[in-house]
Structures are given as C-alpha cells and as structure tokens.
Image 1 (cartoon, rainbow, N blue to C red):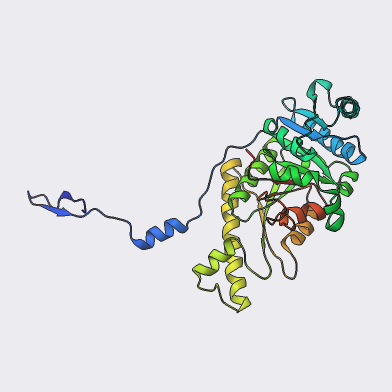
Image 2 (image 1 turned 120 degrees about the vertical axis):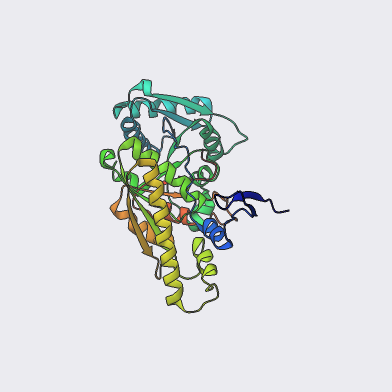
Length: 337
C-alpha cells in the first residue's frame, strides 16, 4: 500500500492528504548510469619482496629494487627470497645481500627468507610469500610462443596469484639502468573497470610515496568493442551498427567520460588533477598502443584479471604490455589488497 502523509495547504485549518514525492523513472535511470567513485584504501609500500636466484636478470632487478626502497624511505625494507635447497639458498641470499649493500642499502633495511617446499613451484612459493608483502619486484625474460611454453614463466605464475602489486622488469629494460625516482612519470591504463580503479589506487600510493607525476590513458580498441564501449553502444542503440563512424563517435565519447571519472578519483585521492590521454587503436592492438605510449614514461601501470593459461591470460593486454613495454610494468591483480 502507498504510504500517505498529511499536509496543511493554507493558513486555514484545512488539511489534505497527498502522496509523497518519488523520483521519476528518468531520474532513477540517470542516477544508475552516473559513474560511481569508489574510494579505496591506498596501499603503503613498506615491504618490498625481491625473488633472487643469482642470475644476471635477478641481479638487475635487485639493483632496481634497491634504488626504489632507498627512495621509499626509512620505513621501507627489502625482503630477499629464494626457493631451493637450504645450502644453495643460503649462498644465493648472502650474495644478493652483499650486492644490495654494495649499492647503498643498509643491511638493517633488508632481510632474507628461503623456501624448500617441494609441493610448490618457484612461482607458487613467491606468490605465497606475497601475503606478507606490499610489492614484488621481479625480472622477466619476456619469452613468448614455443620458447615460453617450453620454459614456463615464473613471473606469470606470480602475477596470477600474487596478493600484492607486481613490478615486472623485462631484461632489456633492466639493462638500461634505473630511472630518476625523484622525477618519476607514470602512465596508468584506465578503462573505468573495477580492476582499473584498483590499479589507480596502487598508482596513487606510488605518487604519494615518491612525489611522482601520473597520466591516465584510455585506449579505444579497434574492431570489436569491449568493456564500457559495449554498454555505451547498447544505450545508443548501435550495438549491431555497421557504420564505423557512428561507433567511433560513441566509443570516443565513452572514453572521455571514463577519463573524467578517473581524473575525479585522482583529485579525491591527491587533491589535485592529473593529465589524461585518449588514444585510438586504429589497426593495432591495445597492448601495442600502450607499449608505444609508454616510451615517454618511466613506469606503466595496469590492472589484470589474473586468469591462468586457457582462461585468456595468454595473449591478454597485461602479458602483451609486459613483453613489449620499453619501461617497467606494475601489474595489479584481483587478489591485491
């Protein structure tokens, strides 16, 4: 039954019964369609986990991690991790600690841990240790195709199940040396999804800790629309439209709206704005566009769904960017705190 309330309509003693005002259907639709700003708790990068195995790539990623921990400040520490037999692990960890100390990290700012659990793979052991870490810095060979299937990928395993963001350093990138962390420029892939908002929060934590600058980028995909573009085309009645100009107009408008939402989130976190960029992947994949755009930055950040091989992880945007980006990539998975 409809609830009623009494209301005096004049200065006289006459009263009338009226129905309370309810929002119209149109207003309810507008409210439902309005972008939702989810304010997340920002991570704090106090414990940086660095898997080491004594290889050249491991030493390169260790050098990057040392420079990062030093810039994060006295409250941050580095945890060196190795999986293997105790005697071999002890030697590997001691050598890594000496390398870190030679690059200026105080020994009191680092610790070492090992795992000889034969029930877990190396990637599984690292991912399990991320439960007590805030960030992982790991090197990757960036293999693909048959070579990758033959050797497997520790980095992929860590990305899929890590409980904290994973900073991936491809070997050619690591060889070029460390960026200037005091003037770090970060490019954030933002499409308005929950994963993208999670990645944005992780980026803001970096910006606050390092005094970095950030730019949000939205890539309008070429060909079949995905994500927010599909909903926009449905609302415009163009989901089966063959006119590419109409589709491009709608998807571009949607991209601009998503970037405004991202900029509003950044302003809520930092009390200041940030740069935004809209790109069209004409004749290219999204990961190719992101890898190209990354050339003017020091770090690329994006969210990942964390699905395993056979569930669209292979060939995903995250994996493609990690394999092709000219700069380190920070991947934020669904399990990240």
